[in-house]
Length: 504
Image 1 (cartoon, rainbow, N blue to C red):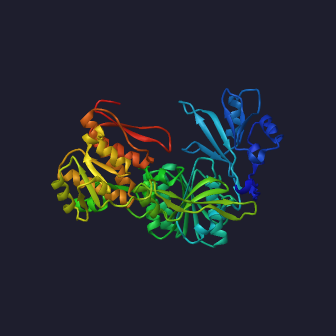
Image 2 (cartoon, rainbow, N blue to C red):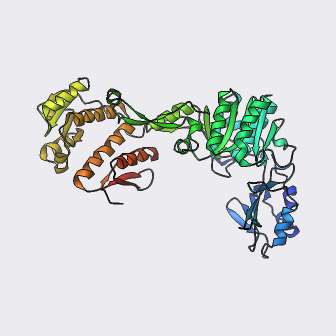
Image 3 (cartoon, rainbow, N blue to C red):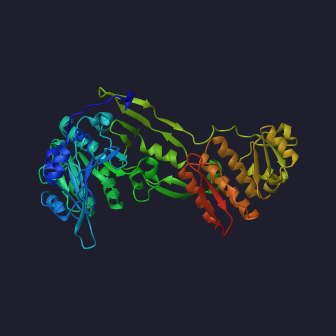
């Protein structure tokens, strides 16, 4: 939170209703606490001491272990447990989840405090007010559902839109048939079991003509497909999903369709040369279901990706994208603490070499490769006149004096395994990739070169540090050549090590 200030927001938690379902001795102990505004949950496990959990600390409520009568006391006073082992308390947002033994008998309860926190919408109000479909990401307990509830209330009450909440497990609008006032005048459709959420999503669109649909926890391929169907019908969609960042979602095979999906594309020889990339690349498969995405760090801090399509395309090309980071200050004003910006994962592009010095490679074949790639390059006789050196990998490993002199002069050295025209053409493609600032192409070329080196020399080769998505592509290069590989080190210096066949 900005400046460490404490922001006070109108909050309703109906805590007395939760305490009323607890065994009296535990309720009395909790009522005596002064910090219940921060109470997260009460945990009752058979044969263990009961606990109340607050941010950063746990409080033992009694020295007497929880017994079956304690569990029965709570179960008798809450709603019916559904297929997801969750129940609630009528007209509140509290959630009671049970643990069962192998005979389906309840042996543990987690009584989670539910709160409606008004005003949290301010931090993303501009995004949802203009009709954009928005996906909210964040770790459990960070406030996704609370913010989603506020979105429903804001759009229904303050924007006068037809809003339907698809409420799995009654997480958003509370237990029983009358929705909690936290969603305002938005309507609520309950979901009988989690496996039917996708069906209720489609039913909401087909039967009730909403302008906005609000959904908590999209987690399956069927739900992702239903979300795409809703968006394609012109309905604004605001939803949550598990995951901490957009990059996590891109790499999640189940949910990546929410941000457009990922597919492998095989480029033609000419197009691959033009891009300076491998022929097999990854591209976005379709338009994203959601226009924007918000990573929730805390109630008062979020990271905003306004254009999901652009960001996903950048990630697939190996570029890190800095989102717009926002905070709420003590007066409920929204402050941008970090503006959005595209940041390349590697150094700025290097100038394209124009004069090449051939050391140990066939000058005629290098000339042929230059002509095949469209010309524009010159082979020089003296390394002092060169912008770059092309050599054989065997010579590069031995590092003879001419190559040491070239490196000392700051010249880039490009090494090929052999003298074939095809390998020399790939080498020229790597030069163009580097000059175009395409880090994925460069990283994949590095992996291909390492594979050739491992196959020729039977020794492991370490690649340069890369982000997780690029490392995965490098692992795939090793797999295509039937070599083992593993990621080594810690972020942000984590890298791929390619191993000889039979090594792990």
